Amino acid sequence: MADEFKIVLTRKERFLYLTKAVVFLVIFALGVVAGLWTATGPRRCCSTYTNILFPSTTVYRYRGGGGGSFSEFVAPTRLMHDMTDEQLFWRATMAPASSGGAYPFQRVPKVAFMFLAGRGVLPLAPLWERFFRGHEGLFSIYVHAPPGMVLNVSDDSPFYGRQIPSQETSWGSITLMDAEKRLLANALLDFSNDRFVLLSESCIPVQSFPVAYGYLTGSRHSFVEVYYHKGKTCRGRYSRRMEPDITLPQWRKGSQWFELRRDLAVASLTDARYYPLFRRHCRPSCYPDEHYLPTFVAMLHGADNSNRTVTYVDWSRGGAHPATYTAGDVTPELILSIRRSEVPCMYNSRPTTACFLFARKFSADALEPLLNISSTVMQY
Image (cartoon, rainbow, N blue to C red; front, top):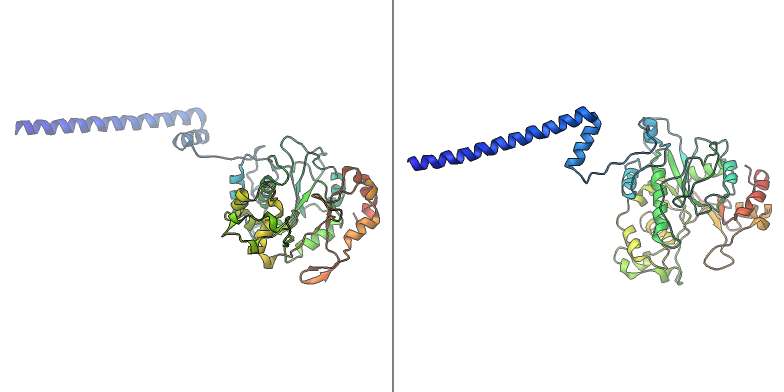
């Protein structure tokens, strides 16, 4: 009995020592937290303590400070931020997907003009500035330029402060689609953006702003060119490794330069099924920017699409790139022929000859002759 009693006492002593050790550690941890609270204040203390407990937690913030108001939340004015693409896309898909429904603020539909710019950035910016002048509040601008390139405009330009965080792109690769999705995501953060048009640095507006705005916001459809042919530049680019998710009969091609309704913009950004297939299998000479969106839209959103683009491009000269218009090519006749198409198209299920709002490719030296005819021919 005595021996058994000694064993029980030994176990209790061990338990007592363990309890004391746990209590000591808890008191020590509370002391550390109290010290951090006193030294750094509640916010920094809590964030530091959170980082200790959860080192993998990633926190993003907008550069420049401020931005905590409701108006900044529904229409960000500071476009430079620290979000990764993954965080940005997630944040954008949390924004309203539809322009319908009630909003707790006065919402005026806007058109988001998204410029995918090269190293020349925006040589035709003065023409666009004239196009936008007097229509503030009806548009938003987003510029994806190569990293390190800064848009050189005055602080009263509509392009001022409209560059977004960017990454390098290369022609014909998936990086172009990544940049387009980056533009879409940033534009979706503004709840008032209703239509989203992708443009290049060589694009020009061939219609006035009121005409373009009314055309886009009044359309029931998006404008994504979609077609199919059996040639090597369409069918020949298909990879059977995309099956069974994307089959050859579903494969489509179209212009890179699209225009989307808000709901379709969100749908393309949330796509986690088809886009990874293009990243893995649409290379090296597949050109995903000409196939991903046409295929995706044709498969899932065909009834909401017009199957055409609103950006005119001249492929009549052949080759891998469309014709480039230089200063000597710019005439009133050229612009008028683009403004009124010889072949009618469909707008809200009715035929029209007003098929194009924008045109490319125009070189930098075409700026002056374009400015000379903008007021008389293009009405801006």
